[in-house]
Image (cartoon, rainbow, N blue to C red; front, side):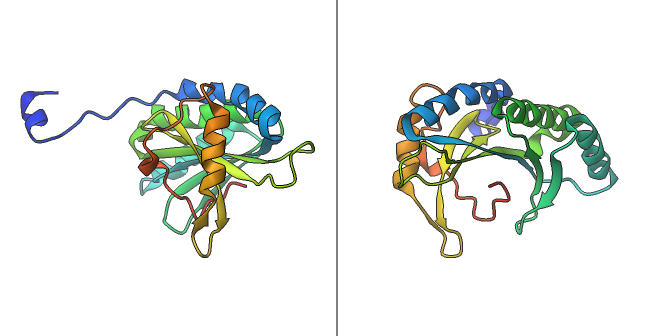
Amino acid sequence: MGLFDTLLGRTKPVKANLDALFALPTAALTLQSAGGLVSSGHAGVCWKPPSGQGAEDLQTEVSDLVGDGFTHAQDSFGYGWLLLTEPELDDLVTKAHMANTTLTEAGWGPQLLCSVFGFVPGADAPSDARAFSLVYLYKRGTFYPFAPTDAQKERRDTELELRVRTMLGVDLPVEQDLARWFPMWDLPVH
């Protein structure tokens, strides 16, 4: 980056740290012991698909790589989703990492937005436990919880989100800037 870029306020994008995804199984143990929350077995990789034949070829390549439990979806905002289903969180994280890596190596890293992992109350959860998602921001290398209560009215449970942040402690790199905890109302991951 040169002086001219600095003067114009241009910044170099942060390189994604996909290995941060592998901290999720350990954090999930903390969520289970502290709040009775377990993986829903569902995850998704969100990206802005480029137009043209290349995107279709990439979808086929990623599908071949991750195998069963993988589907494609598009939300109402035009973003593509690579949806994964796997009962074991370790396997789910590995598949999400493979999908992210494949997209990056194919040259579409700048289009990657986030990976999302669903969590639900487990058998030993308190009666007031609620489902939420952990969102991994690709370009920041950090996670944040998102707990919608009513998507139609665009309401979220910020108390639960802050409680999950506290439960995670140092297990995951949690996004410190709360303004970057973007709502994801049309989320296809449950």
